[in-house]
Length: 431
Image 1 (cartoon, rainbow, N blue to C red):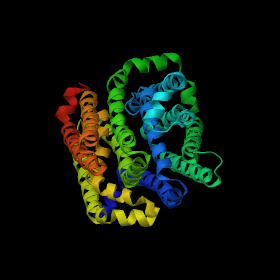
Image 2: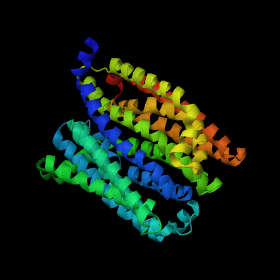
Image 3: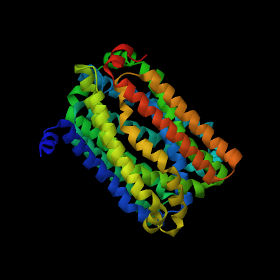
């Protein structure tokens, strides 16, 4: 009862519960629709969406220069507003340039990589969807800074619901050839507009007071984010995108769709718990570092919680994944269950390490974070390339991929724990 009383009085617990509830609903909504989506669309259609999403993810990282990651540690609210507007302006300009390049330079090469001759008519989705993601990320960081955790929960629910309903509607009515792709874009656009409206209603006066001098000053002060965080995050995102593109090129869209479905379903529990804890913990760790210079105790408590929940879930569910996916999605998705079993160790360590990686930015350890992301990308590239080129089977490729990812995630856990010490944080800055 004393423990329960402490938890009830803990802001960290309350904020985590608020955000976890929103994230849970945001993940349950698409989860409930997956049996229908899995029967409306083919594995090839899921494979095309996964390939386009890989490109979109890379564009979203490059477009903003990752200045939005500095919003949390900005000195005051006005400086944070300057960073938010800077991220949005960079995103608009970058996506316009990307659209022009796709139309006149990159169209045919991308169609060949995606194994889809008619993919050119869907590539326009990429820069628009990437801009929507940038808007969503900026609003997410703003809510974390200002402790708008209830608003952040609503935002995640709106985002997931809009995307899921748009996919389902367009898939059922078949108004276009790729309802899965267009539905994803429509849902992201609705979510992005909602972010802008809610931010303006809540803090419009702050953004209205922001001038060009504030934006330029923020760009200069936090220049290490595009220099280190953006390239590092780009490598991280490329590392996530490469498996889909390699599998599509070597084994076809069908296997890419099965792999994508396995990864997507793993993302649900990771996002429900991991994303919520990451956002709340970053804010908590930032306060602890500013007041005491150390966040080791809270780090260890969170690490223990994630390990117990992750390992327990892994031991219970991993054996039943093939049967569960066949029952849930339909018999045509049996391969996704076997792929999920192979990927399970990597997803376990991803679940444990994910919420803790925010400490790299909070402690301003941008250079070590960059080199970890280099290792993540290179390890992924080598494991998938060796598997495709020399093993020649998708199962062998996934075993090597899962083992490599597991090692990289374990390294991240040790690094972030090392940087949670007061001595390390006070000395290093971002160097």
